[in-house]
Every structure is written in structure tokens, then in C-alpha cells.
Amino acid sequence: MKIGIINGPNLNLLGSREPHIYGTQTWDTFFIALKQRFHHIELTCFQSNIEGELVDAIQQSQQFDAGIINPGAYAHTSLAIADALAAISVPFIEVHLSNIFSREAARHVLYSAGKCKGTISGLGLEGYVLAIQYWEQHGV
Ligand code: DQA
Image 1 (cartoon, rainbow, N blue to C red):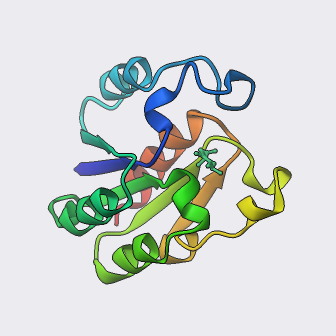
Image 2 (image 1 turned 90 degrees about the horizontal axis):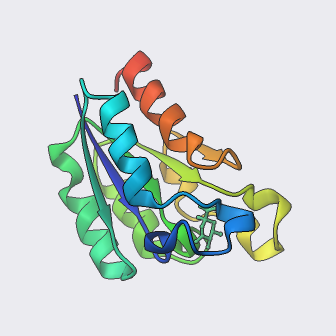
Image 3 (image 1 turned 60 degrees about the horizontal axis):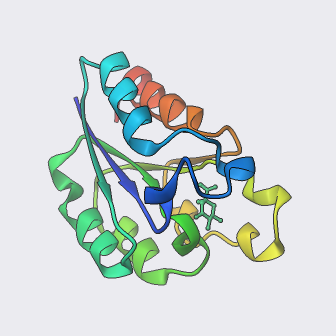
């Protein structure tokens, strides 16, 4: 099974970025452990701070069986990312580290989530683990 993970803006700063909200672990450290834990799954990760590059990555995700996306703030603003998710046949789960529904009202709006199979929010990096387990158990 091949799973593609797409992370949006500022997620490259995990570990140092507002650690009281996003935790202290860096993405690189987490991703190494993730690949070890799910060694039987081919995990690929792409991160960009640029909206169009995220759209390109979603369009190119046809090579995967399933996807996981954390669009960062673009979840709340980007019709282009929502349209890209709607345009492809590969199913995605949307993950947010923080509980977006306990934060500012602007974060309660999600353009992309409705184009995904489901959404996990507020469980930190564990959200990625749960999303992989979902694809593993339920297939696509
Ligand atoms: C986030 C939540 C977004 O509102 C925020 O802009 C982020 C991270 C999360 O993972 O909790 O960049 O997607």
C-alpha cells in the first residue's frame, strides 16, 4: 500500500512553532518513527508553504492508494485545494494537529474537509497515525 502525506504552510516549523499548540516534536523526527512503525506501508511526504505547489501535489497523488492532508491555514481559505481534492479519485483524510473547533471562528471553516473521507482534529501527531491505521484497516 502506498500512502501520500501532504502538509501545508508552516508545518515545516513543527517543534519550534507555537509548541503549546503544536507540540515539541519536529516533523522529521516524527516521520522517521512513522516509517519505522508502518514499515510495511510505503509512506511519502511532501510539504510546501505555497498553495499552487500543494494543488500540484494533490493532482499528482494518483500514484498513491490513499492520502493524508494537513492543509494548514489553507484548509480555511483555499477553494483551489478543495477543488483539487474533489478532482482526483484518490481518497484523502484531513488531519489537524490542534482542535480547530476550540480555536478562533475563522478556523471553524474548512473548505477542504468536505472533499475528504473524514477529518481528525485535536489529537496532535497521533492524528496521522490514526489516519494510516484507518487506511490500513478499511482499505480504500
Ligand atoms: C493546523 C490548524 C490550522 O488552523 C493552522 O493554520 C495550521 C495548523 C493544525 O494542524 O492544527 O497551520 O492545520
